[in-house]
Image 1 (tube, rainbow, N blue to C red):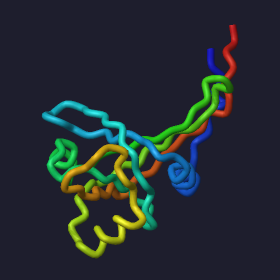
Image 2 (image 1 turned 180 degrees about the vertical axis):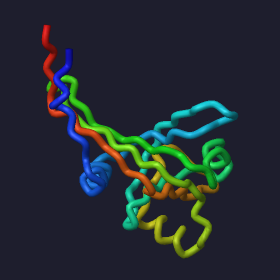
Image 3 (image 1 turned 180 degrees about the horizontal axis):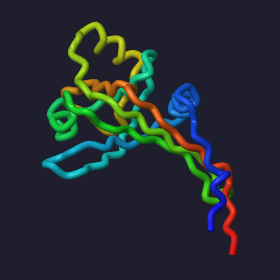
Length: 140
């Protein structure tokens, strides 16, 4: 049986602070009426939105542009049985403004994979939730 006092709900500011510390997360979206999860590198922008950089022709861009998606990032330690998970839910959209694209080219994420005809995708942080596990004990 798990002790429930080891789970703490995180507020929005703490969630965003934790998101800014990690380079990798997962986009959760719908592809052909089925759930899909894709690991991506990302950056947290100054307006607290999640920004991705990918190919304009990618299946991901076609599936999420204009859709409501979830984005999850986490950090856990199996040794200490502790860590955190943050989920951002909001509308995703391709950044179309040339000035914004240029700004993100300087400060935004850079894909870990070679990208042709790259575009930035912004996920608005409409709902931000998180949990921290501070070390659980199992009891017999």
